[in-house]
Image 1: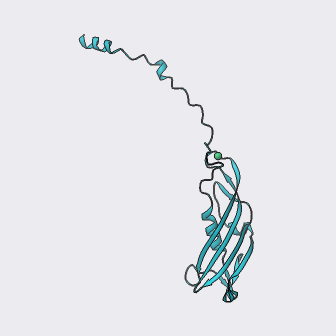
Image 2: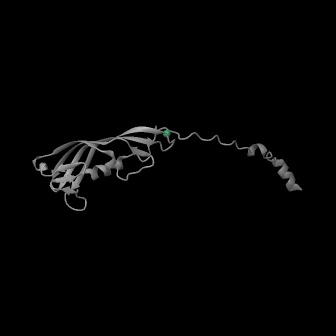
Image 3: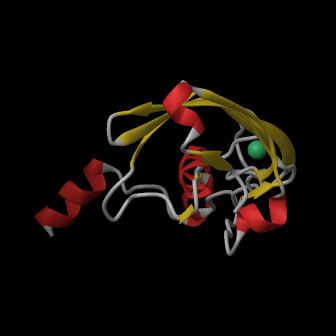
Length: 159
Ligand SMILES: [Zn+2]
């Protein structure tokens, strides 16, 4: 259990949580071809109880190392979710895992973080990708016989 909130404390009002989620546990079996998360997940959130649900809002950020989808250059990028907001039902299939009074909120942060990762990272919005191989000059025009003159074609018709 990484990011947990004491449900009993929520009866007295919102709980603020700040900290970092260690990367290794957070990542689990996450794998992406172009994007790697390279620093612990920083969170600064407030958890509030709203009837039978928890409302989590705040900021989540981390550092990424991306490979440009066009030119494959590796570049650093920050991931910042400034308006992180998730509503977690306290009952049912989507309810958090509990340990006594504590509810584990990690999976909700994990899901949203993965969803927020760039799917097509670009080193630069204008990246043109790998330099194109100079296209072999089309030599057909040079080798092909010049087009027969229309007069020649007419002559042939007469024959
Ligand atoms: Zn690029």
